Image 1 (tube, chains in turn purple, blue):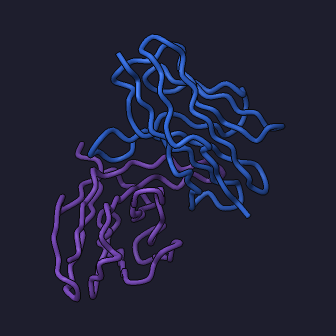
Image 2 (cartoon, chains in turn brown, cyan; image 1 turned 120 degrees about the vertical axis):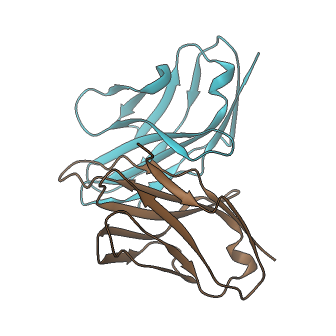
Length: 115
Length: 114
């Protein structure tokens, strides 16, 4: 059982370049999300999805796009990278429990540097 | 506004001593409370959660947390710290009206000294 798999683990971009961070889960989780982690800022939600074809914005969505064409995959796209997007990115997924509380399973993270 | 506070950026304890990592919250409605741990260069791992019921919740690796509604707190505890417990600990809260988004604390770095 692989859990949540993120690729790549490390990436260096130049300002203005585009790239996609991949996230895949094999647990049949309905809910998937992307966070960024910056020193002193904790975890901030970028985008999330509650099922295939459904996405919504988190607290810091600007500069990022997502899509959810399958239950398993939730890629995060940077269309024109900026130095402010230098961060560690985490994908997380969970079941959607009616009336309950989500327990997130996190990927190992993707460290992105934008020069 | 909904919020979570972890008042200590860093906690230092000696191995074998009890540890406490503090968390307070402010949400409307009934809170769902979580603790996650992040070891160096790793993703976050779930430790324990409180939804309802017994105020003392037991979780992974010998950790427990106590929900205190009057003080709006959910402190993480362990009776005897291990050096391997050294990590970054995050408290998070969602609430019954919107359990699709978590509100995260900024994290507390725990250092357990041999």
